[in-house]
Length: 185
Image (cartoon, rainbow, N blue to C red):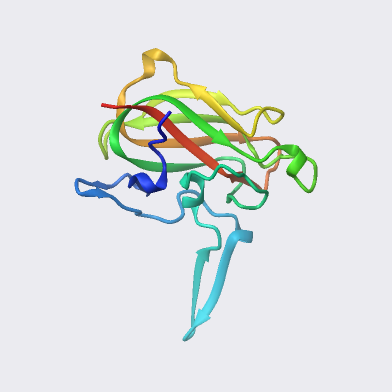
């Protein structure tokens, strides 16, 4: 299945859903609040500059090996990413990935997403359409693919991954890999 959320496909993360006709671009580098532990601070000429040490783009780089710590961590158990797709796509499936417990130094993955929802937007600045809510199994495969209900399959140009809960970590949630599968409209 082609992955339309792949960074190299030409889309980018958006937090304010702005998509130019000539191509999408990154509008905000903090879709949800990046966990403070992942923010680098440096002082230059009396100014403090902050930026994430791991950019949210890591979630859509298409990596197949999921290694503990190589994620975008956001504060709390709820957050989101908004992605402008390179084409209008009728989404059939989404894939969410997280390293398994056996690779975790602590033996648990309480910062992994548990329940998440997918929203689509036909064109930038329109209303969100709920496309489905899904459950990531902590004891399942690292990459889990979810089929959208057939009645919810509409062509969208912008997609939002909304994390509703994680597996118990109240401090942060880690996103490792997200993929969008479907057909070009």
